[in-house]
Image (cartoon, rainbow, N blue to C red; front, side):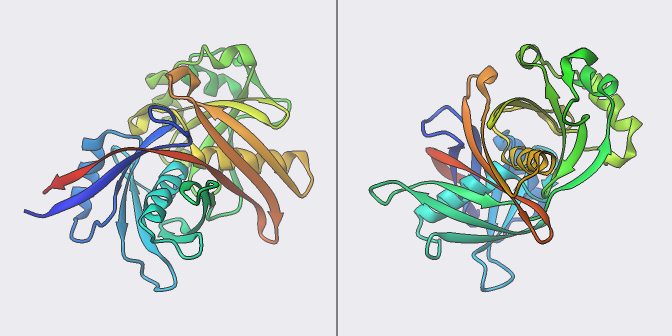
Length: 295
């Protein structure tokens, strides 16, 4: 029976049992789509990646990302963690990896410590910032078990935005962040009310103090009750804040996962480019397990 090697890694942390867990199947040749989806459900992490040969020789890999119930066009911590794993295998080219994904080409710069060991990675989101639906506080607040008054709209209303995969971004009052609890019925109602959400309601709540941000992310419709570190949402938020604040570039430090007991630290930068506002997100990684799946 075919055997497929995998590694697990905690992403956006420098120590085990923090950050966001990820499973990486480093050579998925021969797997079917159904097997990839089943393995992602079996691993039961927020995402699992499957590494395949690239379509273009100039690139380093085609990386497919699955959460528990579906494939994703792009995600942050799976790219950071997969790049970390492959770079430790010597598969980067001069500290750079280029991954083909559904949302486009993702370029990753590898971080190394003072000894030259791979310590983390920084990814460039594949698309510039795009904004979609604006939502009311009255319909978004119940999704997190909050009152409308707990949401802050001075900078923006709750808004759908993307740099490769969409999130609903909402600023909340500091005291409300710890109280937030996802309400599955409210998520379902919001999804049914807005076909433009395309069934994807991933709610990223944040509190901002200048460039320092505390955040939580809920996506129960996709099987993720709460996510300890969400790189793609953090990159989207950084791009959105730069677009609202003005200026040419900005940097943010985002802390997530504290309420889950898995503290995570994400570094986000955003800049204005010819095609709009683009963002990068990066952080450290810590190794956990390795093994084989027998299919």
